[in-house]
Image 1 (cartoon, rainbow, N blue to C red):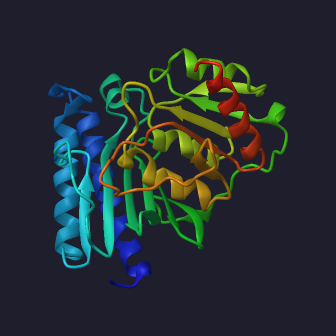
Image 2 (spheres, rainbow, N blue to C red):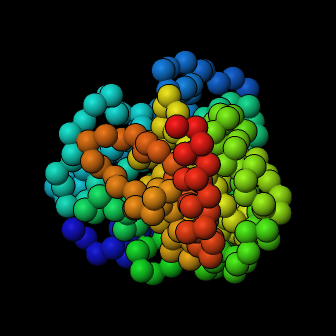
Image 3 (cartoon, rainbow, N blue to C red):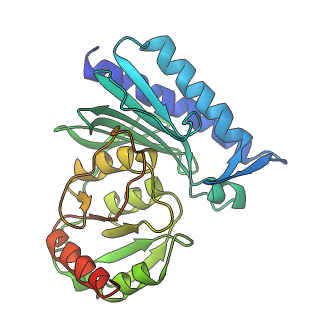
Length: 279
């Protein structure tokens, strides 16, 4: 495998190219939408997916890398036996993209031994690219090339924490969990990538994902997770176990808690206790 610094530079370049494509589609007058089982798919999803895979394969090849993308996933897949596996979501937040909320993102994550070691989350409407390397921190770059480190908040009391939540992926169990967290305020944001950026930019401190009839997928969580954890936060299942990727099942079932890390165990305990009331 190539040097991770070189791979990171390639991934960031690919992300900026994908940003340009999505921004062009977003500002277009028409947008073809196809409804699939897991949700809508647009021409932009397909175009950006093709661009990302073509760039990666041209610059990195298939020898050391496998590729798992939302738009090429066929519904069942064995573990990809490669030293590194790219998990890609070319457009996270397709509904928000269609509805023009601006809250959509691009996710690129490099997985080794089922865990992320490099990730990029790009926010086209903010014109920013966030990137992280395991053990090296999280950074944000602007179009001008300015690069700065980012860090989660240092708040340590649940009552002082802000919550970021989904507008649509909700049920009575999740609402009950959120109601029992005495947080300071709640804001509603689309795209997992946008939610996690909200935390690393210190505009919120907690995000909880709870699967129901369906679950978030590897490509929803892998890149945002490393962005958060390398910025000082935590993302785990409510029982404290780490998320695993490229396992053969792309669904991330159960309750996933993301936070600034300082009250993580207490938040997880409250979530588990609330879910027990529904059993």
